[in-house]
Amino acid sequence: MTDATLIDGRAVAATLQATIARGVAAVVERTQQAPGLAVVMVGDDPASRAYVRSKTKQVEAAGMRAIDHRLPADVREAEVLALVQRLNADPAVNGILVQLPLPSQIRAEAVIDALDPAKDVDGFHPVNAGRLASGHLGGAFVPCTPQGCLMLIKGERPSLAGLKAVVVGRSAIVGRPMAGLLLSESCSVTQVHSRTRDLPAECRAADILVVATGKPRFVEGGWIKPGAVVIDVGINRLPGADGKTQIVGDVDFESARRVAGAITPVPGGVGPMTIACLLRNTLLAACRQHGLAEPAE
Ligand code: GUN
Image 1 (tube, rainbow, N blue to C red):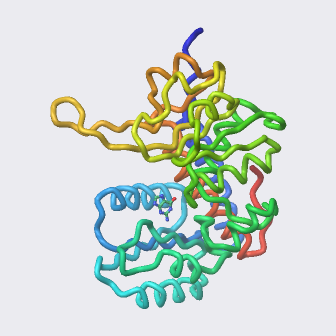
Image 2 (cartoon, protein in one colour; image 1 turned 120 degrees about the vertical axis):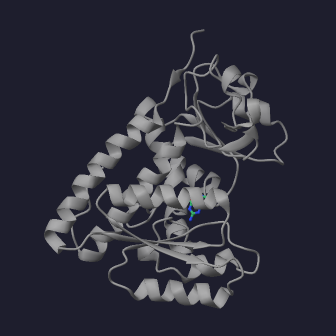
């Protein structure tokens, strides 16, 4: 068996970002206003700070405005909710992203419920999650990471109907919406998780295997059906050689690449797609709010 094709998420994301930048330019021409994304970060978690910095840079590179709101780690929930209300009402803000996780005194569900679903570019509000779950994708915002995963999968398997897809993980951000998207593509979807009885056997049945467990190198080559498309959502930081940090996925890449037909590397696979899809959702939000035609895929 030859080694798997490496799915180049950086290249796909760069192409998508160029398309988005053209769409942004068209919106600016029509409205004289750049689409605006408000990013709310509570506290000072280093990983969240790095994500937020990267998001801000790429939002601006696409010609949109990033409006950053930093709140102290001990802020009260009521203050976060009040900020969300102000952003909901601000016509210069087309999209709102509240960086998760939030400190324990703030209920993430309360903050997400407070978002205007039309500005919920994360796709986490129950209205958007419900649209996806009921298969009504028109008008929904689809969460960025599973949306990016689906684009990479379709790059390898343009026709997904009838294929068996297994999603490992059931988080609200990745696993659940990923299963919904694959079902909408007419895959036969199995969702597995930490309480599933025979995980390796379930995974071995998959033509499409999406892994989002947050456990480093959890899925091994022996769990993979020869020729399968493997999408690794994990970003795990482990101590590496000479004191440096090493980033690894939720799939054991070295054993998996010998069995899979195609696989995403970590880093450079799913990660770059998440931000590209955030830019896409923000452009979509701006078009919908201005009554403009939605940009083509
Ligand atoms: N934290 C980790 N991933 C995400 C994401 O996609 N959106 C938000 N808001 N927070 C996150």
